[in-house]
Length: 459
Image (cartoon, rainbow, N blue to C red; front, side):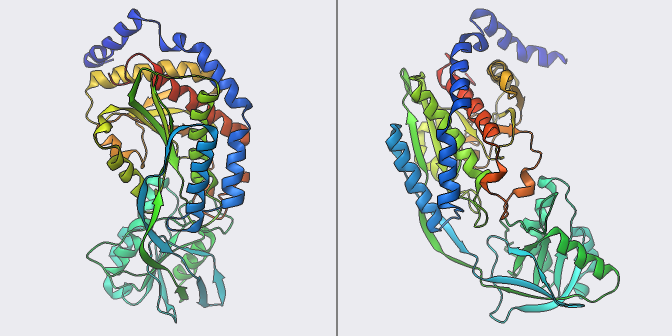
């Protein structure tokens, strides 16, 4: 341990000596919350309703607005306080009919999904030869002479989401700058059963806007093999995708007011929108309902934290982040009173713990906050979710974190999440009900202790 690390940890050690550790002070309460969560049926009923009776929920869709209305009505029926649905203007992209077909060397359909935000093709579609690359470097090496008038296929092997997703986001514009007519992107997933995975893409301001689609891993590999063998591959792509004027949506907010410091707030949540395929079960009905149920269980047990414990279901995370930005604006000056922001947006596989980030915090403040988190983690060791580490947060709470609010991200084993992510396979059957309840338990303990412990997390 470096000398500076010892100094940074010293205040946390002194704190532990002056009062009972959080792991002792909240042991009984944590046991009650965990017991209630593991026996809970209400959260799973909510999951079934959102997934089976409402389904996918893209920004601007009737599905999303049905979900917003139903969630707000349920929060009111359950007795959460100050239930609100602040208006959020969201982008309204519609997929329309779409298809991709290999014409040469043989007629064969291609499994595809248009990427969110893509422009459509002309009514007659786009028919062109395909050039295949495995990286942006290979694309640049081809140059405009070999790319102009062609369709570019990015057959990029899975290298983890953070690295591979760049081709989904930037691929169309990088190809368009060299004169490509359209871009095909190998789905960002480690495993495929010929299932394409959609997601948001972006257009650069200095390049033409060309259609962009995700194709299945299997189709991507086949096309690339044919190209490498010297075979000419021609594809016809048709897409009706278009961007409509912004639509009305809303965040959904409910809370338990604090008994002593109601002005101080712990907010936790997930995003209520999803892509327009599957049911949006893992991504992110699970995060919404787990955080919602974590707050509700505290209320049902008659627990009243010192601070306000709030749940927020953010809208439009998938293709705009408008809900997170709107929440920050709605919070206004009260952002300084946000003690912590907790986000669950990584699916409901077995939880392992949480990660913490505090923008601009000194080593001393970060060490003290992490020490407190680790004490809370001791309460969660029994459910396997006690790991508390530096580095965490989430997209929807990013605006709060930029203003210094401690951001906490829910973490799981992450074994299969990206097999289902943004695809038709993101359905309720992919979630183990008991693993989901473990997340409810972990969030319930974390949220309540953060809202009730004597000091603010980063105080």
